[in-house]
Structure formats: C-alpha cells, structure tokens
Length: 161
Image (cartoon, rainbow, N blue to C red; front, side):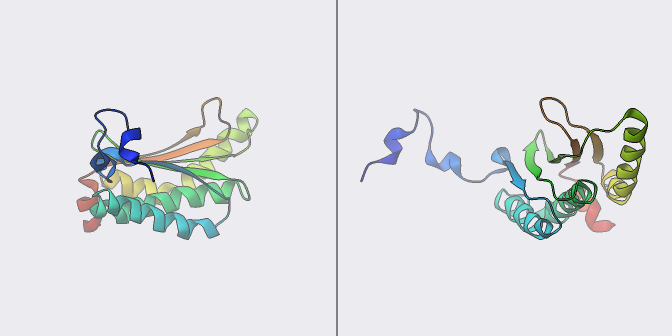
C-alpha cells in the first residue's frame, strides 16, 4: 500500500479537501425528463448542507427544481446540466439545456414563453435580492442557459415569504 500524501503537490493538505463554501463548485449532467428533478433536489440540498450553506437549501432546491423543470418542459427528452457554485458571497445555480435554435421571430416568442414559465421563480428570487435569467447558451454550446444568483441573506428573506 502506498502513501497517497506523497502524491499531493507541496502545500496541499488533505484538510483543504473538506467541503467548504469556497470549494462549492459542482457541475453534472442529468438525463432529460421530470424523474430527474427529485434526484437533483436531493443532491442540491446535500451539497449546500455539506458546504456550510444549509440555511440556503430551501431556496437553492426551489431554484434548481424550477430551472430544471423549465428545461425539461421546453426541451423534453434531452440532456441537461446543472452547476452549483459559491463565488463572491453568492450562490449560483445554472442550467444548460439542448433547446433547438429557432428563426428570429419564433425564437423571441419561445423565449417569452420560457420567461413566463419562470415568472414565479423570478418573483421569489427578486424579492430575496437575487437575479434570475434566461439566455441563449454561448458558443461552443448550443441551447439555452438559465440561472439564479442569490446572496447569503436571501435565505433569511425567503424564510419570511
């Protein structure tokens, strides 16, 4: 049996590999379909709790669930990805889907329908001091990108709603 510590670069301690807010940085793919929503909610709750953000779990789970539901509704049967990150004092949840490109006029109408489907989440996130967005994914990706960004204080505000 070998000593794994000898393989680590100088200055890296195994203690730094413990979950902290600073290293909350996960991205994973999910198969398209509503059945993955429950799994995603469980994972988001556990990630936030393990990384010292248990107070943000309810809002984080709501945001991830609504973003993923939007992706599943408007891009059925296609894979989606979810990223959960803590940077600069805010929680960032981002969902990418494989929504097909549309002609300009159809694309505008489709985006409006998707934004309307996110209206409740947008209102809640806004009331908590955060941002909810939807845009076309930037190259080299195709599809759509949806996100929620909320500060730590958002958990307290969400509990009051």
